[in-house]
Image (tube, rainbow, N blue to C red; front, side, top):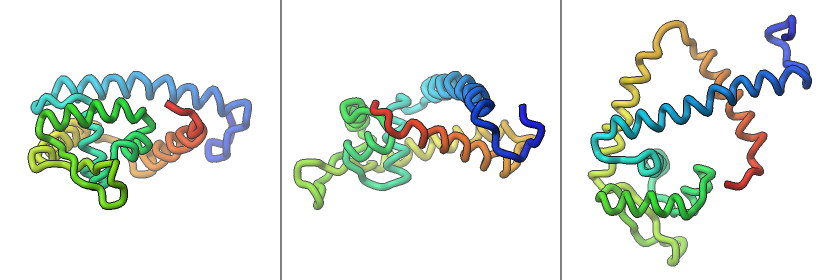
Length: 156
């Protein structure tokens, strides 16, 4: 490890430290997915939840836009949208910019479902309170963002 904790890591030290992050992110991601599905009161899978959240944050989107935003295949997003439609959580509406690609938007039930899910997730995440600071979280987001940039060329 470097002797100067606020200096950039050397190219020889950096890969090992980033692998420590990967070793934590994978299991964390899977546990969070599982918790979302176990806690789902609306029968919402992780994939449908991701679609609902994207639409809550960005407004109506096309399936290809959602796929790009999540770095996952359009076919998988389409299946999740179909599941959301079957549950009455999302609906297709005409897209003024592209007649062949409908916009997908939340229904009232979809908005209520994602709001309930997010509120429940926030209640769970409040339990992480303690000594975490804004700086800690900003640094975490910076590191994960850099790692995401590093693999931006990987096509799911």
